[in-house]
Image (cartoon, rainbow, N blue to C red):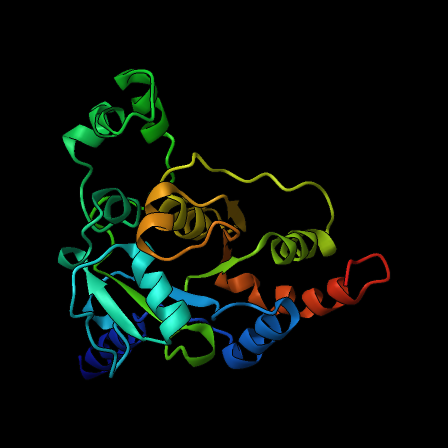
Length: 252
């Protein structure tokens, strides 16, 4: 009986959603920043299932803002924090990340129709139905940090950079196995659905053009694009990136 109790406690200790392999996130981040001349840092993002997934010492964000704004605060200001559902004021972003349920106005198409972005409620509805999203209410909190300082194992790393650097990232995606890049985007919910939820759910890198909301509220500039990398791919990606950028056929 005692042995079973100890075993249960050990299992509960493990349930923190960590990588089995220890990654050198600081070295990986330095490779990205130096090779691509990034403005700011790659951002580590974790979708914590419950309170046990919040790293010790990480504090909640004080204000209520959007996911894309949280990305920018970690990217440009070096902030480390977590945000539960009530701190996410963008309903579409909170839904895509699994923090909230989809509202009726989004589900029917009314919301984006009123913003003038679709011909009909039906065309908006078709788009929303295909937005990558974590199952509703599966996420307890989103956790953010600059990759070089992350105190947790991320699920996804988000990079915002200009097109030339994004080209090198795209070429790096194909370095090992080749093929073609097939990205999914809709011009809405770029940072939340395209660059965070989709890589998390699919295990694949995804590129996005950004969206009106992220450019308006989070400081993503006109000459910057967005992409997300599943954290498991980081070591191989960081290994290949300097090779691709230094290749004879690469633009310096």
